Image 1: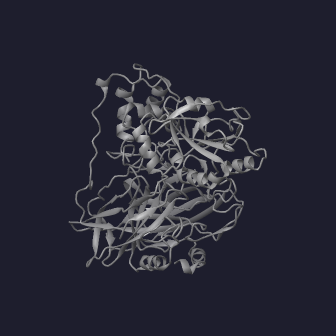
Image 2 (image 1 turned 90 degrees about the vertical axis):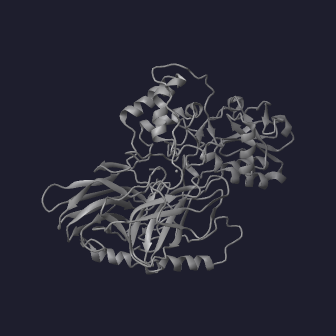
Image 3 (image 1 turned 90 degrees about the horizontal axis):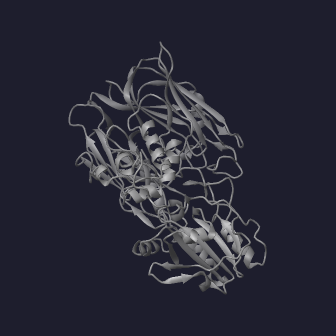
Amino acid sequence: MFSMSHRACRAISGLFFCTLLFIEPAAAGSGPSTAKLGKKIENFTLKDASGNAVSLDYYKGKKAIAVVFLSFDCPVSCSYAEPLANLAKEFEDEGVAFLAISEGQNDRAALAKQVNEFKIPFAVLADEKGSAAEHFEAKITPEAFVIDGQGILRYRGRIDNTYTARLKKNSQTSHFDLKQALDEILAGKEVSEPATLPVGCPIQPALAPRVSGTVTYTRDVLPILQNNCQTCHRPGEVGPFSLLTYKQAVNWASDIKEFTESRQMPPWKPTEGVALHNERKLSDKDIATLAAWVDGGTPEGDAGDAPPPRKFTEGWQLGKPDLILTASAEFQVGPSGNDVFRCFVMPTNLTEDKFVTAVEVRPGNTRIVHHGLLFIDRNGKGRTLEGKEQAAKLDDRVLDRGPGYSTGMGGIGFIPQGGLSGWAPGQMARWLPEGTGFYLPKNSDVIMQLHFHRDGKLEKDKTSVGLYFAKKPVMEPWKGMIIPGVFEKIPAGNDHFEVNGGITLQQDCILRSVMPHMHMLGNQISVTLEPPEGPAQTLLTIKDWDYNWQETYFLKEPIALKKGTHLTVHAAYDNSDKNPLNPFNPPKDVTWGEQTTNEMCFVFLGATSDSKPGRIKFEMDNKLGFLKTFKRNPEER
């Protein structure tokens, strides 16, 4: 239910949804806590992963002590493992000690494994009963505390400004609060910003579990979690924590209530439009049940009321594919930094044209693969881009390395000749309607764009794509249409720049899917259709666009469109300093283009007709304007 762009997690009708934990808000409270600032921090003793007792007094004589509360269940906290290790190394000769406290940790073997996996070079102590958290009045992981040589607390708050909210990053890290506090203390100065607001996951207070109540975990809550959450929230899957047990559910109870009530979770972006497959929405009844359980003290209930454990299908969900495509080698993702968008060129080596009736994506490493999009390249442009990047000498310090190429977050570097849908966590493989299929020409390549999240460790991935070919004649090839939103530039400082575009069909067809696409400045987008006769209809509206949660939306009931039908896109962009994802600080004019620092507006439509493979015939409302914009950056074509 909580989890990992383009998002994005994505299912219904026998499918499942999951998410990446916590999209927002940042932290509890209206401002940073000043508790204990300017006061002496008394000694305390905890045990490390080996069972050795370690006291704060052990570090007496140091010029400063940086104490950081961490949780290996919190993805924000985990992402700081490498930056903290680098900071500790930077200050080790300056008389500064680093100490980590793992909140709620009572499994020393697990703690030792996590410390090793995340390569944390300083002591990590287990705060089994939360006594250290109470000692500092710590509320969030990660939260840093700096104690000076006299034992006085001089700083508390965030490590830096990488995050604006849980799992929402600034386009660049510009303020290093913990480092600044240490530098100022070592220089004999007052800390200029002694309290900042940490961003991460709440530290859960230790509560005695209740056994009985009107709404219980075993009878009422567990079925909801099994049907909607555990697909991703189990060991080895993309969810940053598990929801398989009562204790795990209690640990995240307050967030389960908050984010389901606000419908931020699951991250189903459409707010208006037609009925869609794979809809990830909890019913009002389920949301009320979860809230009542939390408000009632999270009672466990009778073990006899619990349903049997959920069983998950391993391997290919639809059986062995007709063709399996993979990247040529593993791709390595470093432990920290911005997310990675990587394009992999996968030759099909087909000697004849095929129709694809189902696509299944199997990530090699679900801990870091956020989503994937699949495109068809008939002209070898992906190979050219990959060849140029692979021929360049890579700095040995760059940890992101392997096959493929990068274009930034914008796209694949050229306009593809078709697509094969995509994948996001929770989205299960499904067959296209009988008699339809994606046209895959012989000798073409499939370009797979993967969005990787970092989890604080050095990770590797080799994702596979299974293609299932039509065994019966395909009478209605799946075809593409594009509605472009036309603009030349989005002015700096404009927080609601509107973009419009439209097409008029020149033939009958059956509309089957919709995929809107913008970049980091995108704010809102809506797609409508107006038939030659009859009222206009909204196909899809997203009021809170998030580049990290893009997907192809399949219509539950395909719509027969007549020649003369007008389809439009209306979008809005935020190019102000209020947009934390703005790639420029301060904002700059942003032009149309493929790169991270550019923008675009497209709606990709999937439709079928009884004609040969190709695009549905349509006329663009402002063709000259679009061509003028499109030709601005010919080197990106």
